[in-house]
Each structure stands twice: as structure tokens, then as C-alpha cells.
Amino acid sequence: MCPEASSGSGGSATRRPLLASNAAFGAILTVATLVVLYSLLVVQQPLLGGLVASWVIGLYVVWRFVRWFTSAYERRTAAMESMADSMDRMADGRTGPAFNGDDHDR
Image (cartoon, rainbow, N blue to C red; front, side, top):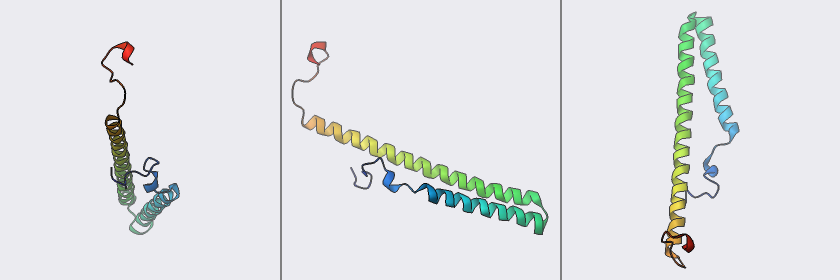
């Protein structure tokens, strides 16, 4: 098991704080608002501003989904490695009779 994946708390050591996520979302909304205001006041084409703002927000949502997916995949991989390591340790240090399917051997 690689040491980077085993943080002991399910990978929370690599998570970004919620404040950084809110700050990034606030920055994206600010940029989208400025684009819409520019398209309304200077260019006078509101659909152009809405199109650009929707693309900016859409790309941000896709980026967040990809980050969430990779984080979930890494957590799942770390959990499976942990289970495999514990099963390997159990198999190496097995003591006592093995279960052969009968109720009285449990």
C-alpha cells in the first residue's frame, strides 16, 4: 500500500477546505456577472453575455464533478487496498481450524 494513499482518515488530508471551494465559486460568479454586465452595457447583446456566463459556470461545474469523481475513486482504491492488506495479514497469521462449511466448526 502506498504511503500517500493511507492518511488514516479516509483521504481527508488531501481535501481542500470548504472556504477555498466557496472562494473559487464566488470568483466564478463574479466573472460571470461582469461578463453579463459588459454584454448588457457595452456591447448591448444580452444573449452573448448569457452564453459566455453559462459556459463559464458550466465548465466550473464539470471541473468540480471531475475533482469529486477522482477523489471518490482514490478513496475507494485506498479502501480496497486496506481490505486486501488486512485479508493478507489474516491469511498469513491464521490460527485454529479452518471453516469447512459445517455449523459446528464456526
